[in-house]
Amino acid sequence: MLDALRAIILDFQESEPVTGVPRRLKMREIPGKAAVYIGVRRSGKSTCLFQIMKRLEEEGIPRQNFLYLNFFDDRLHGLRADKLGLVLEAYFALFPQKKNTETIYCFFDEIQECPGWESFVDRLMRTEKCQVYLTGSSATMLSKEIATQMRGRALPWEVFPFSFGEFLDGKGVESAGPYSTKRRLTIQKAFADFWEVGGFPEVVGYDRNIRIKTHQEYFRAILLRDVVERHDVSHPRAASDLAHRLANETASLHTVNKLTAYLKALGHKAPKLAVSDYLGWFEDAYFLFSVQVFDASAARRNANPKKTYCIDHSLVSSVSSGILVNSGHLLENLVFVSLRRAYPNIYYYKTKSGREVDFVLPAGSMDARHPDEGRRGRRRPEPRGLRSKSGSISLVQVSESLASPEVRKRETAALVEAMTETGLRSATIVTREEEGEIPTRQGTIRIVPAWRFLLELPE
Figure 1 (tube, rainbow, N blue to C red):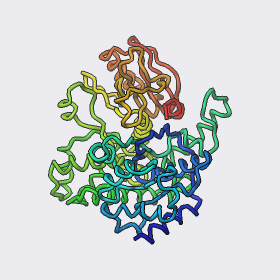
Figure 2 (cartoon, rainbow, N blue to C red):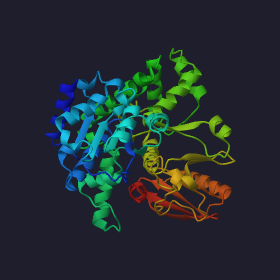
Figure 3 (cartoon, one colour):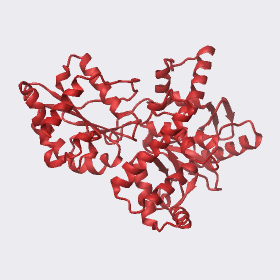
Figure 4 (cartoon, rainbow, N blue to C red):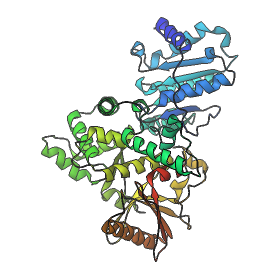
């Protein structure tokens, strides 16, 4: 194993990793804390590490000070917690002069593949002169494993697929306003591409057939590696059928009872508790997200149906049957992911008469934070059109088009009723192309096209 580790370390130091499109992720290294980057598989976490290395090299750090291991490497398959000490032994056998004299930058990719990694990293940070960067594909690294094992020595950051702003960066299109007619048309054309391609970095530039096949492979890999294998699922086919069902019904309401009945109708014997576990594990993998109704009572939030969204709207198009998913659902999914990238707490709103508003963001969630930043209370500037004058909550409705008088009336009525119940004087409707304002007795409803709305959100 020592020989293999030395070879892996040297192979990387002699390579030129692809750094890709610079990410707009406001991440900061904190001395004494490991930076942990978590997110869905293939979202670009490894590339984030390579971009950090490039920045460090530009600051004068020699490549020899980088210790990089990808725990998906089959040569590390036999490496377990009691053997992780060999990593340092192999590195310092190559560079003994650096021990305790220079800072070593340790980059461990997909470290959750090695059981027992937490105590090793904790010991590494206590006993060595180093800065540690980790990536992982499961949110349990954020909550259970890091909180209990790292003893406050880790700071987690979420990595999502490309935002629309990053997508524009990759195309070399300036996204900051104000917008001339020519640049606005360029951005609108790029949004049409983003609508088709989605945010996964690898598929940008693929033709349609290859993109669909790649998305489908992502879907299978997430289900197998991050759900079935990780949690030792006893009914893997039931979990797969449930995931496909939720993708087919993205942006729709569901209950655990109905989903359990659906699986039972397919012949699965997955109990209600197992279905509830599957939903939690999907979210752990940053794959499918469940959104609760906005209510002060946790019991009522849990009792009401939830809405489900996928990590990427184009992935939904690639894996769904197309029978139940329409472009309006996909637009709502796109808006959700963009909001979730910036705000950790998102709900839907149900008025007293039963009308629904797609998204409500409580005041606390309007602080654009990384997942662990809330307790420090740091804030970023709020995007125009989202924060209400009262500073309490913000209402966002999604409608592909308001051209139909019936649709316009329905969406407006839901928002006006929600504004009245919450005391808000403003709200937002996101559309594919339309823009303007609707004055109402309660306040102003802003109509904004999706491309502009996405660029106004904080990264």
